[in-house]
Length: 345
Image (cartoon, rainbow, N blue to C red; front, side):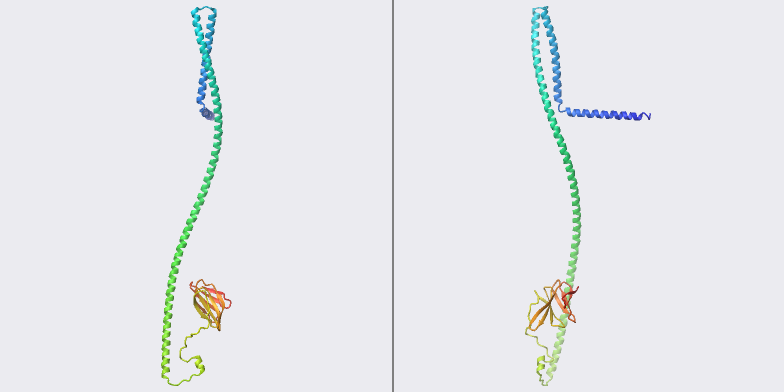
């Protein structure tokens, strides 16, 4: 039983293969003859009619020969001859009609053959057009697949750009928040600085008021002492030139030197402790050194590096360094000899 199973399987596969082949041939035959079904059926009917007419023609020919033989033998009577002639004439007319119909059918067969040839040519042209359309369809499908792959690539690039944009947006929001906090801190620092400057100004004004009060009191006491002293005083020329002792010096009224120091307002002025050098700070963010001579001024150097207007300047005790404080919350130290920035903070 086990030995017979492979043979059974092989015969079944063989039968299935043949059935599939027969079914495919029948399907192809049906598809190819579907367009010519009417033409084939009409052609078959014409052949059947022609065969029928051919058989009738043979039978009539046999009957006609029989009638001629009977007429030639002279056995029947006169009426029989008349009937036979009438039948012969009728048969001859029918034969002529059949020949005419045969010619018409033959012409129809020729026309149908011509029409069949034209339809075959049209079918070939349509097959060629179908092949071209199939090739074009294949090309279009390849183009569609290429465009779809390109679209997927563009979508991936677009998604990547969206992610980058979102990341940049988050970074921008974070930086904007940091900027807002920095501006708020800056505003608070400015308010604190203004408060401290106001406090320092009030303290300086208070000290100035106390100094003026003490000075006025001292002057009042000296004036009272001088008024009580009735001794004559004969001052010499030197004492007159240097000023009377114990009396305040008068404010000068004559301008010695006038010059334009800065491109804008001048905020600070300071004399050097060792030379006749004047340092000025202004709104143009520069510190300038001037050599003041009798009746004139000479620019000795310009100190740069400040980011805002210089509000205060001062020399050290040796006159070699100069300090400048600007409105950008920074102080800087320059060397007077080479005019270079030494410290910035």
